[in-house]
Image 1 (tube, rainbow, N blue to C red):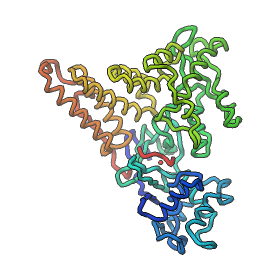
Image 2 (tube, rainbow, N blue to C red; image 1 turned 45 degrees about the vertical axis):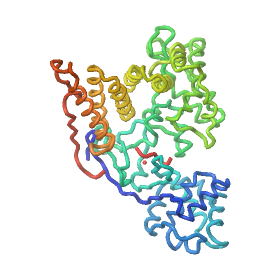
Image 3 (cartoon, rainbow, N blue to C red; image 1 turned 120 degrees about the vertical axis):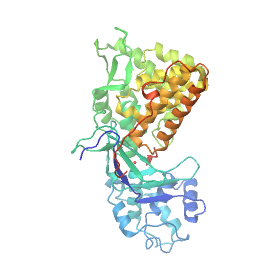
Image 4 (cartoon, rainbow, N blue to C red; image 1 turned 90 degrees about the vertical axis):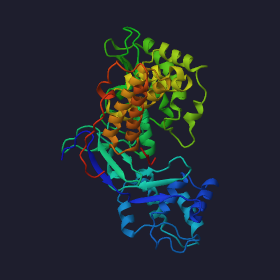
Length: 463
């Protein structure tokens, strides 16, 4: 079966949902074990594992009963991936959990609970909404989908926590349907960073099409010879070395060979200043809140707390003068921070970022749409005719893109469409609007999104 871009592929109901409430005595005991240092992972993973036991398996607990699952549901959950090496022996955390919840000699099999825990670690979706409530959900089919950093499908969870999948581009019958395990921001990180994240959180080294490209499109510099923005880090040389290195040696492997698309490989003398500037800015950029940080204790975040330069303008000038291209992930991160620090300059900074996150780059669709929403907000605040006209166009393009990847009933699409209508109303109310002509293209015509209706992944974060 073929799927067109924007077509809904699948809807899947949750296999297991685990919601943590402070009113549940067993969960409060899990929380106390975490606070006392007995549990290695976040408490929600252990709670989710406990909620995946059957009624018979929790019999005799020291706490009142809690949410359980039918035996067949547990059997289905155990079909999902869990690294065998992690399931050979029950961890100290699981053993402590069982001894705290059940009398000696009672409780579930420790190896079973360890395997269920590992299934949640590698297959769950985060349901946390920022209100302090911890929750997770697991799906059977969705958890079996492969990751790609240039996936052909996009997923989100609806208000009922159903998994909904749409085609990001045309998919032919026989093609594997892939999704991203990374956030839209993490997808724009360099190849090595993406692979490290997936290795640390999902237990595999990514070999998708993007990660197999010889040039790293997230590390682009200005050539010191031709002065064009066509110098790329050669990712595959860096990746081949990093795969065989311990994590402590990875940072030294970021000094990949640089090559210009016109001039060829740069000499060490030409590449060294570019790589030095990149290394100086990297700790700060990598620790910005939009990116997932490696490690449990946030080493990278700690070393990047201090801004390398005094102001956003100075930092932006330094990054640009040092040879980083707008297409370099660090300069894009600097532009994002500068837009926060200098609201008056934000529209120009957003336009620079949008010029990089082109519509043709499939992994950038969601990020580009959200940038267009941010641009529209700043332009509407200024309120001139030209600003409102551009805002309506940006909102319309964002609405169309979000409808394609998430469906026209998705909250983000509907909000973008409402914002476009609001910008048009403001534009029509301006005294000098008459006679200037109607809006053209996506800014002037109602967005018409047609999609076929069928049925609709850290853990992976809610989209």
